[in-house]
Image (cartoon, rainbow, N blue to C red; front, side, top):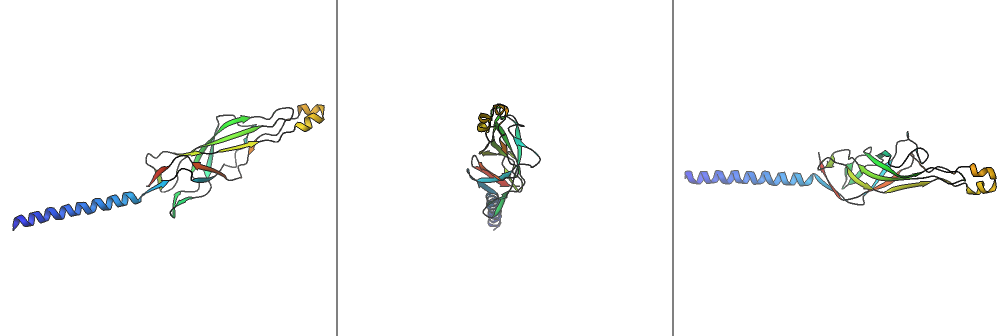
Length: 176
C-alpha cells in the first residue's frame, strides 16, 4: 500500500510540473507579436528644426516621432511618440542661375515605446525616403542678365506634414 501512495505522489508531482510548464509556454507565446515587413508607420519631425538643403549637410541624423499608434490584433504594439532616426543621404544647396536645391532623407531605425520591445531591446529597422527639391528660377535668370545671380529655391521638408516609413524586416516583439 505504501508503494502505491509513493507512486501516486510522483504522478501528482509530475502532473503539477506538466501543468505549470504548459501554462508557462502558453503565457510566453501569448506575449509575442510579429510585426511584419512592410508595415507602415506614420511619423512626424519636430517643428523646432528646419529641414532644408541650405542648412543640413549629407550624413546629418534627424529625430522623428511616431504620429499614430501601431496596432496589431487590437493591441498597441508601438505607442505614439516613439522616437526614431532618419539620415540626410543627399543635400545639394541651391545655386546661382536659378538652379534649385535638393534634400533626401532616409529612414533608419525606430525605438519601440510601450509594452512591447525587441528581444535584445534594440531598434526596429525602417525603410523609406523623402525627397524635396526646391523651385528652379532658370527662366528669371535667362530673362535678366542680373538673373545669373538669382539662386533657386532650397529643397525643404515640412515638419508639419505626416510621412510614412515602413518596417524593413519582420521583427518579433515581446511584452514587457
